[in-house]
Length: 289
Image (cartoon, rainbow, N blue to C red; front, top):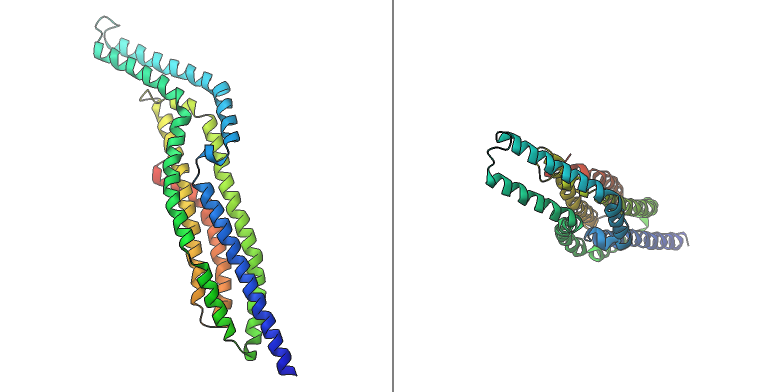
């Protein structure tokens, strides 16, 4: 009778572990797919309403200021050029043509600021798409099958380890929910930063026509490249985490399963920490400040 009761307890524990781990893997796979799709989108594709609103705000409030800055920068450059040629008595027509081309390009750039930004993020999204294929290539079903095979090999003598694995699986399931929420919050935070930076884009772009003032515009473009490819680094982090927890399928005993479950928690903490550092990493690579 006792042996039969212990066998029932063993079966219940195994069923619970399978359900908890299956739910954890399934929720991560779903969230990873959603995050991948979001990171592979341009700001306009992510939320067209917010993109349009920020564009309208920029055109209404920021673009006029940028136009004044552009006029001031061009005037300063023209006066400096004239002063360098004997107070305009000996004007180099080449320099005048060069200034005219700069003025023309400055106006064109201001009129296409958001198109330029969308182009930058389009390239970043193209890089992220490769990461999406990596995430979907992880065979979580195979991992779960291997896990179930090892659990089915256990006996009544392993009841203690099964109880530990069951408790761990409950904790891992709850923890994975927290990790999934953290992933989504980091993704949304990135897009909020993008929209805020986009709203003032005309001002730094207006300085690009001048070498002295152009540092502001150059650094702004570097920062936008950094944010665009931050999505790639975030995707890489998620793919690495998926591969690490996929190693759980290599567990050859219930004891190893308990250890692997705790490793999932540790890897999850590292994932969240590194996701928060991807912005700094990307800026350091692209030389943005």
